[in-house]
Image 1 (cartoon, rainbow, N blue to C red):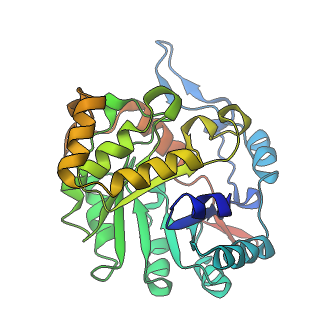
Image 2 (image 1 turned 30 degrees about the vertical axis):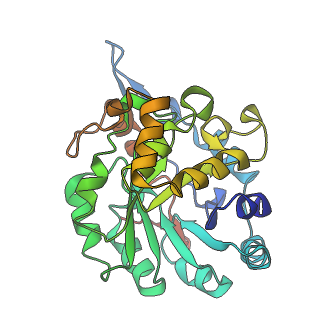
Length: 291
């Protein structure tokens, strides 16, 4: 996958530092909470089943180091998503070029401060994040240190819920802005990423696979090497050529613009409720939350 990403023209390959041992047990998610009228108050995600699923994906310190070394051999920059506090020094020691903060941790000032102290290049997703939390997060970093990425935490994201105008609003917080795309290529091709590029996004983040869409959990929202090459080629077009191509292939592209300021959908709020606090670091036998 690393080699395929590099050969397809990607600038970074990213791995996630999510470990099953750091999963937190929260009772309301064991059976979920649903009102009598059918309104869901908390999703169902039992601890034991989720821990067992994640355990199959655990990476050791040696695995992370191997990833960095392989990226160097391949000629692509390495990035890692930090999910818990007190982990960023480990990533520095391994030699990662950049660090990513998932959208549910944009509100985690303690984690952000640790990352800011250790990395010159930081990418922060802002899906399922409130406006005041993005403002507070931006104040942690030096000018040019952080890049904020708009995203919508609905998997897959429908084209009429992209709200890509949100990138305009994010420009007040970082010199570079981008889009973390969770649309499904089989449903909407690469239209969301192409529209973001046409709107002059500096960064596009995609889940990536060399397998068939049904072979991995994230497969349906993942781009292939062919997709990455197409996006790279599209990014090399002039602004006018990008818009001409969109007009030709997706005349209704305006539906992806949405709003700069918006309220989070019910689905995003449910995801935020679960994923914020999903994991926590272990310190002296106790779990320490990011918040």
